Length: 379
Image 1 (cartoon, rainbow, N blue to C red):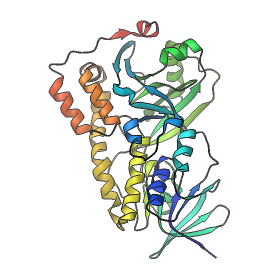
Image 2: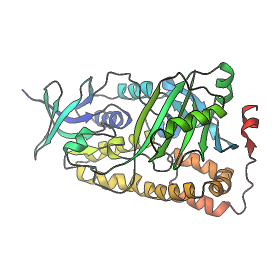
Image 3: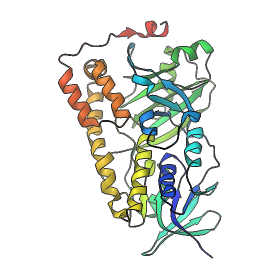
């Protein structure tokens, strides 16, 4: 006998877990199919605004590793540091974060259960798992990652823009950990269209680098060179490579019964590389479209709330990386703009407001003092 649910969610990451949470909260019978066994490591810098998390009716304190009270932007050996108001930028480990969020969903969760095939008819979505189970639902939310099997099955997202990234969870001496604790560092000017990062976690540093169209081997070589300058050894830790499905253009994100969310929908911010915020946002939009009985409205909902903003982000990306030094000096060194960036991360404003802030303040701004890398490390 074929099992039947209101909604099947493929993938238990932030997008799938968010969709499952809001659907379950509304009383829908939800099944989550997660291909891995949780908790599982997930390559991700793990930065997310506390304001983004505040939409949920529970606290994420148990899985917040650190709260950042400053962000440092580096261009070559010049660094500026901007305070973060109310330590609103949180650092998480995705293994803990994803399990915690999914654990709050009122849903049946099957781990270690990859989806093998999806078929949509006029009356239902039928999912076949690798174990041979056949499960039906009225709707499906596909949150199964950048290489979404569901998207392929449905003929969606045939053209993708992918960035490459590698990340290392680096154990460092106590003195080094203290130096970076509560301070996120973003490093520009080292590799094409991309940046390196140093994010503090409770007992280690998450370090990484990402870029559009990097040449083979460039990410590893550049990351080693940059981290050597920052006094961080990365010779021994395991390196995790992954792709980022960067937003590039508006496209169809669903059928009548199946909706793509998170990385499966290609919603990574083209300028900042953020993924968690838009996974959560799209997961909620998918749930809202299903609950409203209007799944066909999902693509336009996502375009209004995410896509339009990302198209401006694409423009920001092109300008910033073509004119990196003047952008660094006129925008990032402007404390008003840097605080507006925190508003962007917190989903309070979009790129249109950020551009207006840059245009209206840079002629009059008192620029933040730059210091050298040596001064930064010895501070």
